Structure formats: C-alpha cells, structure tokens
Image 1 (cartoon, rainbow, N blue to C red):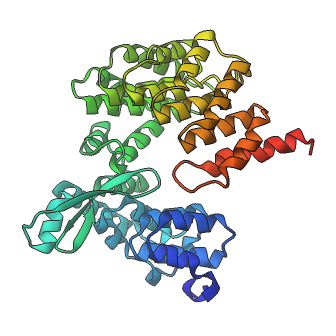
Image 2: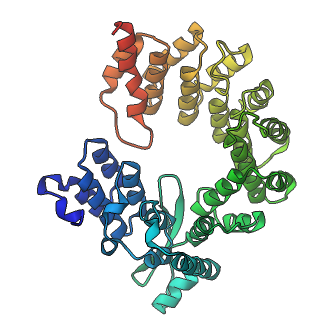
Length: 417
C-alpha cells in the first residue's frame, strides 16, 4: 500500500504545508509528534513537486524514502535535469539508492556533465526556443546552500549541475582532481552548493597534496581563489577527528600569518573563522588584532572566535576587554555573538554577567535572547524574569527555542530537582 493512502484527513496539515512549499511551517509541524505515515507521504509529495529542500527536511525528521513506490517519486533523470542538488540527493537516499543500477547512474553522470558544461541558461534557451530575457534569482536549495534559478518561457531550471556532477562522481567512486573541483566552485559564490560540495569533499580526503595545493592559493591574486584555498584548509583541520590532529599546527601557522596580510574582507573573515576554531594563544592574539576592524562582518568573526577556549576557567584581561567592547558594538550581530561567546564560556567574572544583564534591554530581540541564554548558563537569577518578558520562542533562522531552553534547566538546578 502506498504511503499516501495512509494519510487521514486529520493529519493533512503537513501535507498542506508541503504542497504550499513552506519549509518553516513544515519544520514546525515536524517538531510536533507527527505520524510516520504522514512524514513518508509528505516526502513523496515533496519530491514529486520538486521541493528538494523540504524533502531533505523530512528525511532529517525521520521520513522513510523506502516507503515510497517508484511511481510516487520523480524519475532520477527529471531530478538531474532540474538542476537541484537537494532533489537529486533526496532520490539517492541510501534506502532507495539500490533502485538505480550503476548503468543508470553513469548515464545521469554524463547528463549532469553535459548540463554543467553547456550552462543552465543555454539549456533553458534550447528547451524553450526563445531569446527573451532570462529571469535569474537566488533560491535556497537545501538547509545550508543556495543555487541560481533561471526562468524563461514559463519554465525554470536551477544551476546546480556542477554539484550534482560532484555528488554522482563521489557515489560512483570517481575521483575528480583538486583543479577540476575548484573550477566548478569558482563559477559560483561561496554559498552555492557547487562550492560547498567541492570544499567539503576535498577536505574529507585529508590528502597532503590537496593541503599543499590549497595552501599555495594563499598568494593567488584572485580573492575567490584565496577564499577557496582558505576554506579547504579550514575544513581539513575541522574535520580531522584523529587523535594526532596533524593539521592543527600547520593550520595555526598558516592562518596566523595570513590574518596579518589579507586585504579582502570575505577572505579575511574566512581566515578569522579558522583561527576561532583553534584553542591556542596565538590564534587569540591574531583575532584580538581585528577587534576594532571597521567592517562589522570581521568584528563579528572576532566576537565568535574569541570563544575558542571555552574550557578555560577565566579569560585574559585583553580578551575580556575585547568581548566587553564588542558587546556594546553598533552592529546587532556583533553584540549578539559576543554575548553568546561570553555566555557559553567558563569565565564567571561578575563584570561579564553585568554586561549580559545590560543587554536584556537591547533594542534587538536576538540580542535579548542571547543575554537570557548567557545568564542562565551562568546561573544568574535575572534570566528567569527576562525570559518571561520575552514570551515563547519565535520561529526563524535564529533558534530561539534552543537558546531559551536553558532557562528551565537553570530553574531545575536551582530548585534541586
């Protein structure tokens, strides 16, 4: 029996949300206790309606792709043609991957390569046969990455074929070179799926030649090349969960020196991001050097990165002073991230608690939530009344439920329960 036939009228809310293409509502409904048959049917519908982001969300919350009959899903070819990496990934979920023989996967690989090489715009013009102006927008393809969507003559296609190609190569055991993966990424911005797929794949290889190729990009005249190299190096160290942690020292050396000379703001932000993942005094010193940077994005990375030593019982005077300054920054995101860093740290200096308490009256709700969160972690009673004034968590990209949840845990500890 198909999953769709098991959905009762009273359980149609999730199905309606999928049909409306509303990921935020889908997530809220999934966070409630939803029947497994409804989740499975919703997944089938999301795939049929080309909603790859929602399909991925449903899988994350326990939908079983294997409960969908083949005729309830899109053909894999249609998903590849659509240019949506999230949609292709949903159809290649491990529970249904065996439905596609290697010969078909190789055909899809060739198709993805042809579409990538031709370009989404050229393919769309070929399909429609019109020379009218293309409409190009940026859309969220999955939880983390965006792609371009081109529309012409009532038809649309996404420009994620490079990412699809990379995914299919990895699935088929075909090892694309560093240069080829970088070329695919550099056709797009850093938040594009093709870029993310390339850097993550290269980082997971933990290959010395790849490390050296990425490190060599530090001196490249093109900021995009330097950014790509920095991200591969950062992720290689981040993903290294071995006891030896062989990339920690080389990463610290490279990024500490790099932070002194980088002039491009986007690349500098990535370099500082990498330093924030290092529990070392040299990394802290390199971050402190940029605490007063004129760019808010750089200051925000400093605010977040100064929490790299959260296990330490106290902060140095310079780090504490920098965080106190950043908690009063003119930029909302900088204040919020500095407050989160202080709250999640182990330093219980009274001046830090007072600084967080001062932010309870901030004009921005996210900063207020961060202050409540930090005070609760510091066992400060002021968090209780502040949380009550805020009311229930509000939906959005900033996970208020996660941050406000610590208040009841504080009350539990306080009351000895």
